[in-house]
Image (cartoon, rainbow, N blue to C red; front, top):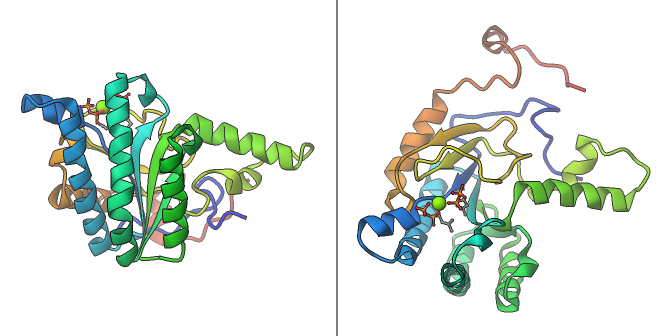
Amino acid sequence: MAEFESSTQAVPETGVVPRHVAIIMDGNGRWAKKRFLPRVAGHRKGVETVRDVVKSCIKSGVEYLTLFAFSSENWRRPPEEVSFLMQLFLRSLENEVEKLHSNGIRFKVIGEIDAFDPRIVELIRRAETLTQDNRRLTLTVAANYGGRWDVLNAANRARQDDPHAPITEERLAPYLSMSYAPEPDLFIRTGGEQRVSNFLLWQLAYTEFYFTDALWPDFGAEALETAFNSYRRRERRFGRTSEQLAEDEPMPRVG
Ligand code: IPE
Ligand code: IPE
Ligand code: MG
């Protein structure tokens, strides 16, 4: 079974700090272009931002951080850029996993990873196994991930396991790639674009959205704090009225 109920089925508990933060790390290419550097220099710099943001999330008490690193549509990029991104992913896995583990971080990858080089797949598997019992922060990297793929894959697997049972939210949940995490509380997209680009379509149903013009390599602890402050000011109603929230009425389940 999935560990967490969906926000359309039950109203989740929410706090002042988002428990699960999901980020589209965008703007690496433009960051490099502004400096007359090749696009890939932006990707390299972007890895430093990942380190910063992971540290800040731990400090703030975030439990789940999910980062969109490579979408199923990113294969459309020039082959040299795709191959650089693969190298960067490989090197990061080689260099960072021990550090993640010693910092109590559980590492997960979601997406169709079989499309990657077998060395990458092996490193991912090893990293996931090594860190599986850590709970200080769950860091998920979405790689060759697409939200539509996730839902279709889950539906097909649910149907395979029981061809006659109708597919309900409860039945689908354990097959979704993030079934080990609550739905994101806060979605951040850097780089100025205001779109979801096939990220966690199903899981973002009741997530708060935050867009910033900051390019990913320029994003950091302070910018993250600004996003958290914006989150803190939101009223998350999950279908209820403000008045009901003020009265703190317990809500019946939907459906
Ligand atoms: C995000 O930065 C990183 C990946 C998609 C891998 P971009 O490479 O999309 O940067 P821009 O949007 O071109 O500036
Ligand atoms: C989305 O960024 C995917 C990642 C950050 C990995 P893109 O820069 O590829 O998004 P679009 O295609 O411009 O929307
Ligand atoms: Mg982009």
